[in-house]
Length: 269
Image (cartoon, rainbow, N blue to C red; front, side, top):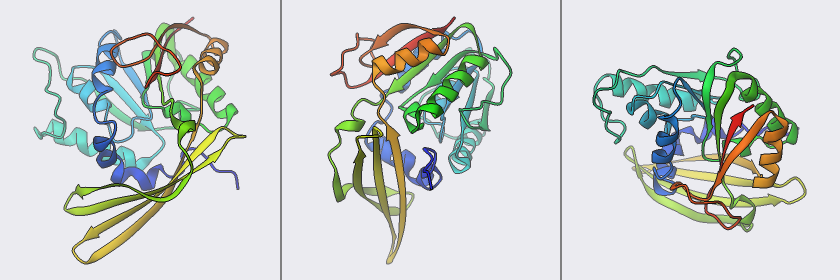
C-alpha cells in the first residue's frame, strides 16, 4: 500500500508541542508575524497543526484561517484558541494594544484541494517544511495549483523549507529527547530511514509515556521529501507565481545552499 505524507500526524499530535519547544521553539514565529502583518487581509496558514504559529499571529491582531488534515492536531489548536478567548495564557506572545479582536478559524482540509473560493486570500503561508510532507511530485503540483487558485492576484505566498532532511544519517533506536510534559515523563526513541531514489526521509518515532509505574508506548512514522530551492522556485513559476526573494534565515539574510533555513517569498501573477 502506498504511504501518504499525512499519515503519522494524528498520533504525533500529543507530542508535537513538547518536542518542538525543545528543538525549533519559537524562532520562526517573529518572522512570520512580520510577514503576515503586511497582508492587508485574511491570512491562510497551511498545515497549522496545533496553532504553534497561528496563535501568536492571531494575538498580534492578524485575521487568520488555519488548515490541517489532522483532526487531533486541530483539536489542540481549538483548545488553545478557547483558552485565549477565556483569558488563559496558552501563548506567551502578548496581544497588541489597540487592535481589534482578530477572527481566527481552524478548518480540516487537504492542502491539495483547499475548500475556499478563488482569490479568497491576499497571503498564504507554508511554515516549517509543511510542503515537504507532500511525498509525491503530483501532490506538490496539486497543492501549488490549489494555493494559486485561492490566493488573489499579486498576493504573497511564503514557504519555509527544512534543508537538512537528506543529511540525516540512518540509525536505529537512538535516544533523542527526554523530559516532563503534562505530569508524564516522556522519552523519544528514534530511527531514521533514507530512500535516496524517491528523495524521502522517514523518522520512525517511539514515544514512551511514563506515569508512575505505568508505561505506554506510542509508535508512528513521519516522512518528508527533499525539496531544493531551485526545484521549488521552478515549481512555483510553473504554478503562476513569481519568486520575489529567497532568504537564508529568519532575519532576512540572503540564501545560499549552506543556510540553516530556506525561505521563499513569491507573488501570484
